Length: 378
Image 1 (cartoon, helix red, strand yellow):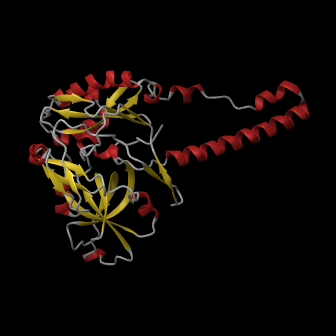
Image 2 (cartoon, helix red, strand yellow):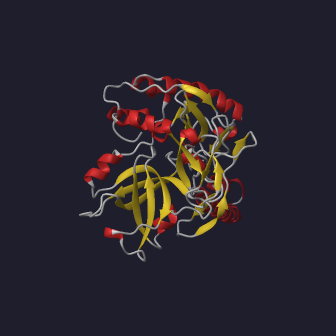
Image 3 (cartoon, helix red, strand yellow):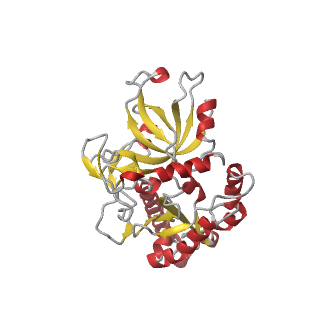
């Protein structure tokens, strides 16, 4: 769901008719009719014969190996976020756990390393100053030079940190929250359950102007047996009563866990159909899935200058092509790692002035890995 309220029934109907699938060999992402569950099919990319999992099969982990992109544009070796797992012995092939499974490296590791270097330098400088003061004035006077921690900064930190709690404790808090979220009938019912309700409310009312919500309900919680932790975010697979399986993100804050409504709905600043129809030359934020492409045409014919990507909406109803200049920092920030076919991102998109095509856009800015804002933060 990314746009107006009228899109909701079509989106849910589409989700019932199709299943997302990731080829375990070449990582190509494609859709398969639900009546193929448990049957064989040929991968459109590598032509390998695959078996589509049946309804009772168990998906695998939510988080794959990630690649870091440094601030100067360089790339480091892949890294893996810590994931708590209960192995069930089957490999995941469901593409609906979009934003979390294929999330690429956050840049928080680079920031931590820089922060550690700065702190170490400051401590060394403080010790040198303290030694000079002791030598000149002697004794305890040097203690006044050492900086003290500010109580206000400590008080500003979130009161709940998932990494410091057991998985059982987190799941015990998250399950009733997910049930209330999926049973909500009005916008007012959602506001106490979601992250940043003061921001989310205006977004919800654009989609549901009468305040009424479609009720999907919770059928299964922690469907694949994995709870994935990344910073202050815990992601859990859920299955709704209409058999839609996807990942639900819970973000820790001073009031406990809250559902990230934007990542659940795939919210974007403008509906995809309106964006394509009006072709605005100003940037708009989108949650989407990105894959490398080789499509060059109209305003973007020069393949020596442009890198092409296929951009797909969260409901898989819209697909367009986005372009960045080759060799730019933006290309390095968004380009999928060599072992990943597609990645969920938040990007700012716009059409070139006087665009000749309605399905080719400029990628103006990288806004974040995955679909949860601030998920990289510890």
